[in-house]
Amino acid sequence: MTDSKYRPYADLKVKTREYESEGKKKGVWFHVGTIFATPHLSSQFMVIEGMPINCLDKDGKKVPFDGKVTIFKRDDFGDQEAVTSADDLVSDKKTKDVVLEDIDDKPIDLSEIPF
Image 1 (cartoon, rainbow, N blue to C red):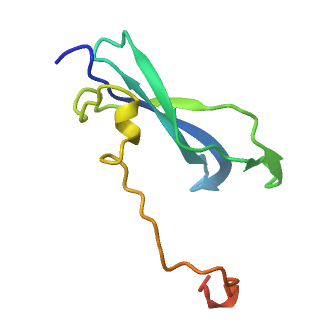
Image 2: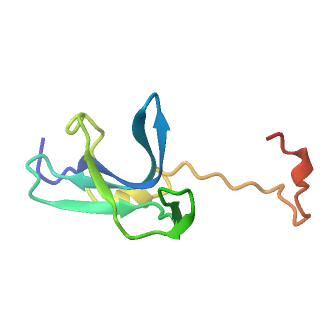
């Protein structure tokens, strides 16, 4: 293993709301990105994939995102597929984006969505 190989080290998450289950307070977390690091943690970078606009306060009211992001270290650091740079993560070979060509501009009828 060489120092030029980066692996996922930690996940970046934002708590968007809290709820109670079986008498315990729990959180709903939104994944915003990943920190990548070399094996000896001498070099790191992060990839931000998204950010929430609003969160819910303890009373259930929408509040603006306060900018606080929590870092969760991964247990499987070193076992992940290595990348050599941040550019490897955005190359066409690594992404799984799909372009739907049959989308039209008609309004969406929400009554057809079963929720």
